Image (cartoon, rainbow, N blue to C red):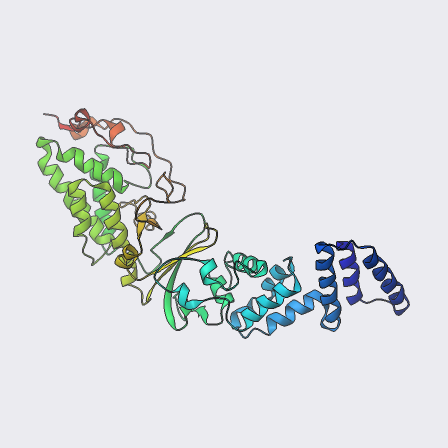
Length: 416
């Protein structure tokens, strides 16, 4: 069957006139031999389509012409790459024509659904996504392409609708005149940080002071620094020791200073209060909300379009703030947070995913899909400090376990 179609395609190449009649006879003979089934019908439709466009340059010419008919600068700029993807697609002429008709009329993407609050998927957002396999394949392909200075998701939406374009300057997308921030996850979750979103002046010094305090009890801390979960447990252990009230107060103040500089100018009292309560889950939830608010406070975007390419169909969530997420039964989930990291200033801003309020979809390792830094070997602390701790209980690396027993709590003590 495929040989017959390829033979038909050869008619579009330079063929000697003396050979044309014999080729026609061969094709006609092969068609007569075909069984009367659905495969034959599909092949004959493709052959008919090729013959109808004999003056347009065959399948390649058809695709090129249809792409050129789409009045969208992004499509024109990416025409070669798009043509390559579309030419590789196995689709009927009917599905192809329907796809291009929707594309040309700017009716592929339902922008009102895309930017409505709550969780959506591409079955709801893309016209004919479920009924036209050509539409589904094209959309799934282009959404995973990063090109023309745009990341995955951004480029795909820009290509699929002439009403969706790259913002002027440093922004992400202009969707029907609305400035929208895009965060796409394709294996590892995204962070709410970029070159413009960074800690405030004095962060490095404050982070080094906090790391130095912790190193008195764990000299071989991981290169990435202390993670937030471990710091909360560390604070709980010290607070439980009546001989270390001064150290407890100093530690809390250092933590407050560091977090205050990570989110420079923001109110971080809800995070600090949760740390004092020893509630790790609440700490991370308040930290996630503050991280999002800090990021959006330095942007001019109306809201965030979160795109998960790991879902099938592709899933999206549009939201303007954490309260709007909560109203949709969703919340931000933060991965591992390294608040004393100065070598990589992205690490104080965790990878974040959108998860259901009840239950979660995150990686149980807590890394959000990103490989965790290898923890350093944990050894007993130096006696020079005059204090000691059971090192196994204060691991600041990603695999740290919570100290639960009274013996663990009593392991921090001042040596007289």
